[in-house]
Length: 149
Image (cartoon, rainbow, N blue to C red; front, side, top):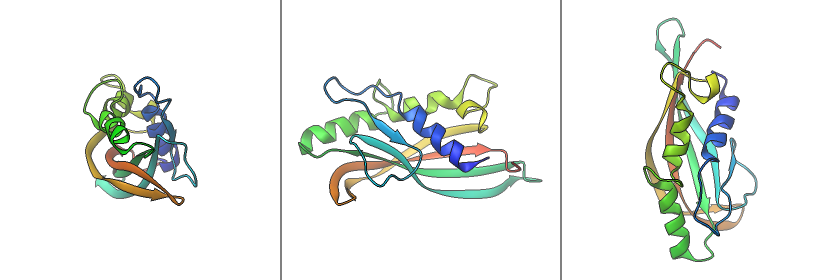
């Protein structure tokens, strides 16, 4: 698996969420950006386990993705964040990202990986990004795929 295209594909999948009316669109990036336009989703750090199967046939990556929401109104911001962290619904990041798994028998992320799974949410708290405070959380996304390319 090539890491950068996988990161970009996760961000593209996340962009499919539909936020409540009046919120605007979720901006997304496959990297940690210098500055953001909130609400913003980005693929941040990752861990990589090599050789999950013999002869470099399978690697496993675990991506830490963050979603940050403006704190103009802390209660409203947390409601928006909660809708994105829900397990289903039009604003669900889990549902949007896992839609990129493809149909049965197809590879995930447009052929970049064997499969992916949004495993959990963690770190629901205030984040500082480029000197500005945002309410946010992390989503942990596991991706498995070819180890040899």
